[in-house]
Length: 208
Image 1 (cartoon, rainbow, N blue to C red):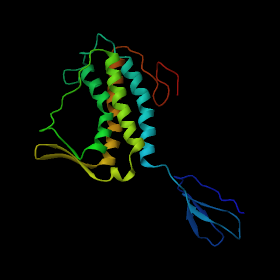
Image 2: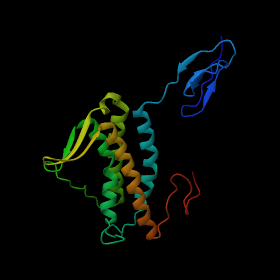
Image 3: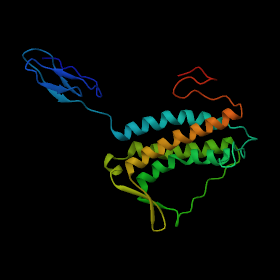
Image 4: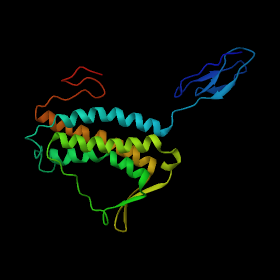
């Protein structure tokens, strides 16, 4: 039986056969002169990709939250900046937006006013984060791809603030986590707190 070569999913080049026909490199084909077979390469589901990324990012987020100085919760680098408490509260709640993608069709601030969860110390902050993460994980593990296709709305009364698919909402929640965690990293650097490695070594940790 002829062996088939699986080529990289995102490789842009083409394989040219003897008759000068070409086949995109995201499918498999044999390179023998007189025979070739073609089949589509299977890819990871969106849910599994989101789950993998969520857990990778959560490792760094957890380290950041652990390092917040207990006497600096109300500190802010500028009068227009959030306090560390406010920024951290937003970070720990962001996995809940993934849960909302599976359990709601909209969030209306007029009927559900935003109220950040109160916490008194790092242990309580991390506990809230872990519970939020566990619930998001459960939905990504048990959910179905088609559940992310419908439209989701962010509203304030009758005013529509944001329209996106539920899949885009999950992506937005992960992107917001990365964005606000970077903000917290700047806050901690200004307070001379060692910054954990994230996508490679930091100035304080030589890890990958």
